Image 1 (cartoon, rainbow, N blue to C red):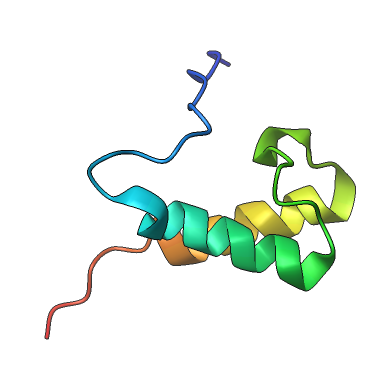
Image 2: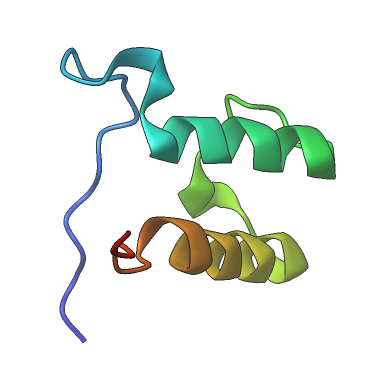
Length: 66
């Protein structure tokens, strides 16, 4: 399996603090009592599984047409 490139844990100038990935991460951390400074790659066990599932459902879903 090829190594995934590291994703910078920073807010982009183009989308700012409302980047959907950051909003989802903040909500996930709040709901599960995880420090928001934690990196997703630092998660283990059930938290990691829940984050991957949520991320795949919310961020990788094809856009729905109106």
